[in-house]
Image (cartoon, rainbow, N blue to C red; front, side):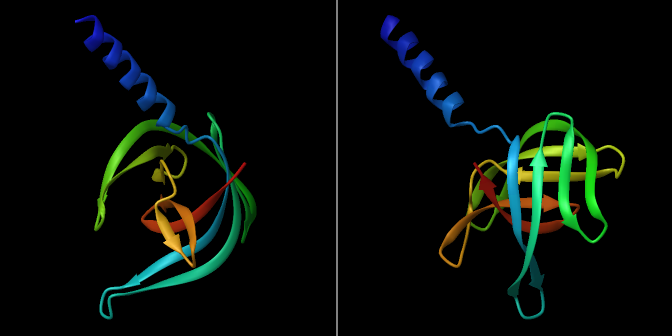
Length: 131
């Protein structure tokens, strides 16, 4: 019984270490479009620095300059894609009434580099973490 409890505590510790906090700095590099008729993806390069904090999400370099949205963290969710199920962190932008989700880890490989997936009001973006 002691071995089981020790194993359980260690397992919980490993899982919590591997769980990533979504807060931090990212740079959105691509907007991904999908053509349902030809079933092809298009990658449109962008450069939008994003800062996710406990109180909101700030995006720089937009057409209208810097935008800051008040955001409520709704917790982790699971989204299913062709490759399986992935954990995302879900936010609700209270003033815009839209959702913003970011993958827990870099899950999309494009041009030899791994990116985090952002889903913002239905639009898919690829972002890299800035450490």
